[in-house]
Length: 482
Image 1 (cartoon, rainbow, N blue to C red):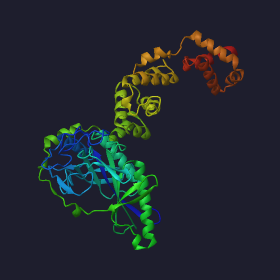
Image 2 (image 1 turned 90 degrees about the horizontal axis):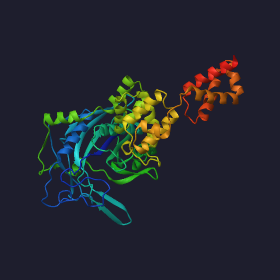
Image 3 (image 1 turned 180 degrees about the vertical axis):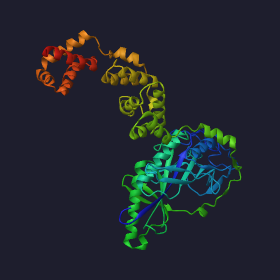
Image 4 (image 1 turned 135 degrees about the vertical axis):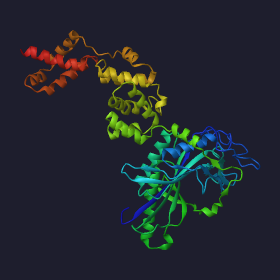
């Protein structure tokens, strides 16, 4: 932090687990359905209703712990966290307190700095309160009871940029481990920030919690605003203006944080073990099954892409930014296509297609393109059967139709002309029209051949083989010169 201050940050990240049903009942955990249509006596807290733990949620939570190299406890306890809010009908949230299922773990940043995790625990989500209806608050309990894991870091983060990088790494790890969809727009990945500032060497000062940040941009902006606010408050010398322990919300439109409520201490929640739920026991067999389900994670893939496939750090980073993209790359290369060429096509035409109005595809799964089609396209371009410009046309057609490279080449007439007689005819026509360029070539300025090749490609409407065109032009110019 500038002006002789340093920032101390810890993150609490909530990730919704990718289950079909809620944590303690059989209600669907779908997003976006009509309000209050996925509720039952358990998730609405009716008297006498008893929770039953979702086994699938436990398996996904274990994957997350394994993926960050956390230590899984053989026995953990569910507790009741008591507080009243309109979207929490029971008056308490079932969570884990002093005995979570996972402790430790870490994530390494690009700089080599390690961000340590304190713990990951399982808990249920609260409902959703909507306060933008004037004096009326609306409550949707569809989200109440959805399974979450909350990962809590040590206060190892020193800047907004480090916080965003940590979140990016954590999100991609959870996505590759198939823990959940981690869609921040839907609220299935949310971040709380604990932040304070101090002079180097000082003890920690009062921390402030920034609640429910749902985008990387908001995390960065909220941290940068809050650290400046706290520094200015301390530098004012007015103790009445000093930060107090509280929860604040980030107003994205104004770019400021504002007070939400005073921050509760742990004793305010009156935690105690939930009497309706037995201890969670994790045996070695279950743990090993979950370990076998965790695939190669992003950082390991990036290293392999650089060492085995010769890709740049940038290429490897882009390809591992999304599990579907990385898996598509893997499948295409496994079919024998050149890795660098596959990477270029994926980062160019394919990524441009995603989110474009023309294709209306948000993810790779929305495109009908298959790895075999891309592998075949790379091969026909390398062999000279199709020019790269024709390859772009073929790829767009295949992304629209889902059909093969062979069909695209035939349907679009993309196979390059290699017939010597036809190539010579095009070349003679261009030579006759470009006397200056021909003179430069005869004078030893070989770069001038590019303009002539371009002219032939234009005359042939891209059908001529450019390598053979260059050879024919040199041959014909030398013949004429002789």
